[in-house]
Image (cartoon, rainbow, N blue to C red):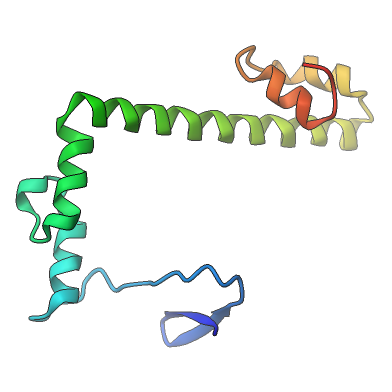
Amino acid sequence: MSLCLTVAGYSTPFWDEAHITYGNGTYTGDDPVEKLMHDFHYMSASDMIYKELAEPVRYCKETKGGQEQMCDAMRKLLNEEMVDYEIQMIQMLMNDFGCTFQKAFEKANVDPDIAPAVKKAFGMNP
């Protein structure tokens, strides 16, 4: 099975088997899909139709535990992005300027909080 994304009349298959469903956020109608699109447009749980979506939104936005979980998840995501960026920067310095790993690492001025993960990605001792 292939998944297709249709944009301006063109259809491109995705062969990654990720089972992604794309929806038209401007769809209007009188059916369950329209109600789901409605809920996706609202940030407040009290404005949502489907309780299956509203309750997790309410938990994440309106309770201390949910807010802490979301903050932790965002912090983790940001750290992963920072590590990926620094890895790319160091690789570029090494490739384009012939720097050693150590010299590139110093020039990149890597944040100490993510330095161990960056070193590990290069097989170095954190």
